[in-house]
Length: 394
Image 1 (cartoon, rainbow, N blue to C red):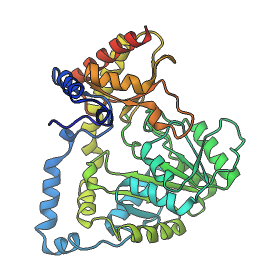
Image 2: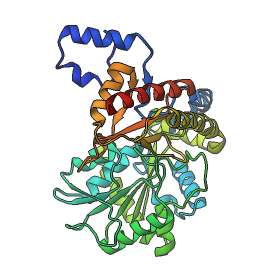
Image 3: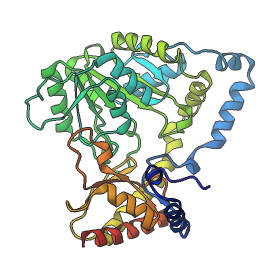
Image 4: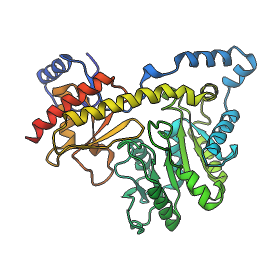
């Protein structure tokens, strides 16, 4: 039987055989358009460069012995040097000793959660927030509070702040410079660390880049060793997610403690993956330019289609980068039901916005992604969603 799209599969367990066959028949009548999962487009992966890098490494006996052995728990030294130099060039001066290579940035989020949080602690974050971060925090049995607009901290005082300042998942929005300074002020007032999720910062399509939270905090506190910010980065969105190569940048004592946690988790990230990442990273800006061009064109097509096809009462974000658009439906429409009907009736896969709220979910929301859809697919998918929105709005 054909694999079920993930948004529909959980519901199928409650349906009878005839209903399953009828829904699968409807799905098969036209091509499924993926506007849900924010996965990098595999057709844009630099496969030839991967092959060249792997061949060069493995055909050299000395490099091959290194590549096929354990790396240091902190990560492959030359890669850590490259990451430190790149972050320094972007206004966050750091040394190799400030870098820990992780198995994807998700492992970095998990390690920080284990280091900082205990049961009953409060995490202060943007609402809505990245599901992967919420799962890492949930394991620690925490409570949640939104980042306040005022200078008054939530009660009880948060133990950790989490933010994705650039084109964050799921909304595609950015923190302004004033909002970044405000978050750092709150962190100072509460003497709490800030976990910065920087996985989309290189996917900017327009506008001027803003300094990272780490760069701002280094400037205000006089160096990374005094900074409260723990920065998580990754190559997954820029090269390929299968490498599972990310990193943490932080003060040396934080890196030392996170390294102990990583040793307990997996000893070290794969050396060959790290060496391939380093080889491709030497020309990273040129390598990622095709990604930015393709994703920008798809974003533009989706935004134009939203303006053309969405009825009055529907709003959406206008991201300057990243992979996501956040859709706000009329309050009478439940996003979960909308996503289910979009898949079953319109063959368009989306994700209900309620999944991204740990507390007080805004139910009339939807996350759209333009990463996997072609330009024509994005236009057609939004046309179908607009028709459904008019139908559900009555």
